[in-house]
Length: 240
Image (cartoon, rainbow, N blue to C red; front, side, top):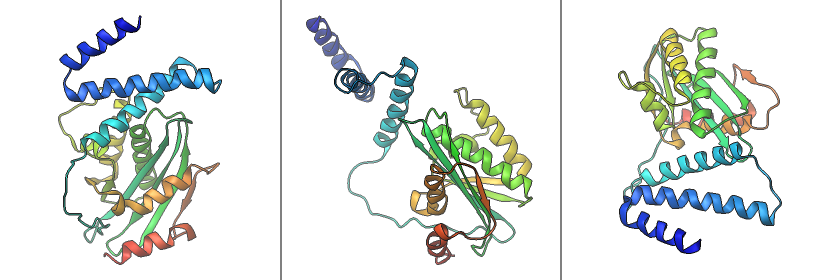
């Protein structure tokens, strides 16, 4: 049996492109890790949970392997205030692949960097970080629409989500496609003029909220700066 596996792996090495080979080996490692957990740690997860965990870790693997390598100049990423007359809504989601739980956080600010509103909520039953990010966008726009914040820029550090929401021709046929449709409809109703991407350092307020949300028992909303955000909000105001 071992010889058959080795022959199969040798053929994979010879025939698969490097990217696909890396993903195959990464997935095999995940299966091997699950096998070891069952034998040595007495863990008994159902097949569906094992599959979801493998898919989520593979997505993270793909993301990090798309990052450019080699020396490059580090540019400072900061939050930028929106133009006068618009609000900027920063949003973020968090995800833990073992528990399939996470959180969402968002903050609405004007051209002076003044916080107009924000919120945080725990998420359960997630399948991936992308799932958390798009649910965060949905909850954020529902809140903005309810409170009438007017024309807005929606900003996220999830590049895949930003690209999909900015696409006018590419339909999303994945399991999350319906959620993307809902978010785009909410964006049109809210008056979202643009969906932008920013690096993590430019999205720290929403990031802090998304991580904090993982421990919340119920959703929290606010219209003034809470203590846990004071430092992050102050740092962003310095860049206005």
